[in-house]
Length: 417
Image 1 (cartoon, rainbow, N blue to C red):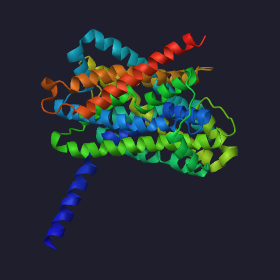
Image 2 (cartoon, helix red, strand yellow):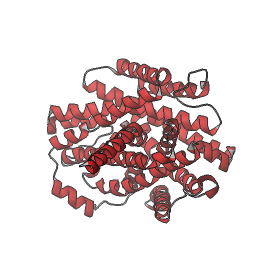
Image 3 (cartoon, rainbow, N blue to C red):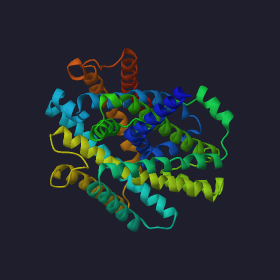
Image 4 (cartoon, rainbow, N blue to C red):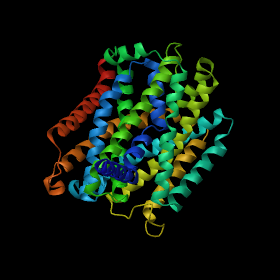
């Protein structure tokens, strides 16, 4: 009896510690299902049905390994990834890497505001009201709030993304066909399918995630004794990310693909679901898009501000005030404004921005991963906490596959003429 009570007490203590440390893994993973991601998953489902769902399995494995590397590197070194890249690769190389990442994330943030605009238009609210209002609220949360307040709100957003499970179940999925597609995808290899695969990988394992994950672990003040709880947090976050992505592809693959309906953005998927799966499925899909877009419009510029300012030695952190971190908040404000303004421009090429920002993510990802793997295997930096052989095999394997896909993407149009 006494031992049972001690066991329960220990369990409750561990649970309380985990809940206190909860955040970086789940938030980083959930933001991955942003407007650009939802668009990419929706387009893949509409174009190929269940045929692209198999990409989520290797993506989950790589995502788990990479996110764990980031958390471990942040906990052990107390430094952000961009800070470490600058110290060991030099300012010139760092500058060119981060120019590409900055452009990519401006495109990604623009896509988030496109998601806000599109989802609210389904509920009859003009983008000229929704976009500026969300931009202001997001700015106030980050600039005037604290990390603890922001993190709690972000966790609520993460839970809200599970609405996509409801939307998919209402659409009437064919589970036997889904199982067959996982084993035998049967996708024709051409420029279009390779572009979609790279976009899927680029949105599931985005470059910005690596920087935000490491920075948030540091800002939360996690130590090596917290590591085991952080790993659980990462596992939960990665699994939720892939589950949500799975159900988005299922929803569109079950309804739009059989009817031959092609879409260009996530809003189109929500609208197309209405006559096929009913108003509830359509509105649940649109609500999920809105939540994801607001969530990611907050995090993406924040991640960009973290890694740019860390790379060049400026103060970072949302627990600091404006005077303490002018460059950090200034860059955050600039990205929000320029992204919101692009959405409000008539005839802005939003679809191209959305898809190609994801493709750019997929092309930039190997550069970031190479930097990460070299750093985490450096014993001068990590001591006894370097990678195990299996982690290196998965990491380098992911780099190799992404490089091959990028080369094939570039060469396919040449040889297909």
